[in-house]
Length: 254
Image 1 (cartoon, rainbow, N blue to C red):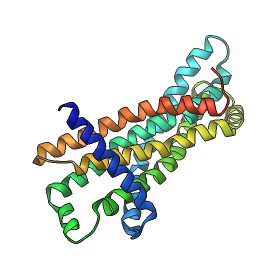
Image 2: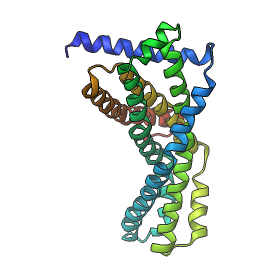
Image 3: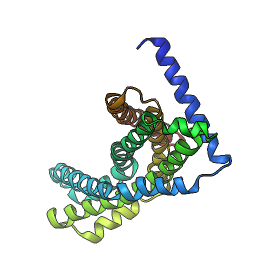
Image 4: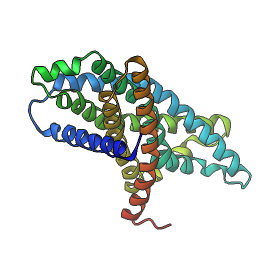
């Protein structure tokens, strides 16, 4: 693929993203489609998010407790685990899981509709595919990923509690007092603002790749894989940029 084709694809992606975003404020509003997508992305992703988050919290608590034990500071593992999960690990890990589960589903579903000419049928009937198919998915991803992140963070903190109390034999009340101490505006704002951006990235990239599907089953496989890979790469890159910007905005100097 040459430079000209890459620029054309970026232009198409930009146009789709802008039109889908503007569609949030324009009639008609497809509430039914939005609710269906929220159920698919939110309820459908809940179990895997809980499972992954729980074991991330447990593994992180084990590692940090082992390191701090050598310095006689094992009792402060809860504070470090809490900050790491709320500010960084929770939002990123859950976004990656969301991209793998919901993002691949969006890309494959829209890709199948493209190959089955269902998108062309919408155009024939005067219905905007972007407004009906993309906008509800972007709204759903932007709304559901922050909620999943909060739930996942809670599961991770519970996993850290289990390790601290039943493995490291620390005080449970002291663990939760440390978690309470780090629940300030800076940490919560940093952790809850990222999922909105991540959700938008995942939905827009996945929908674009789905609507760009060509070439039968092989093309569908390629579009789905590309959607997940590109989403994950953009999540990691945007996380660094957001972290740097948030540290500056919140007045936290390095």
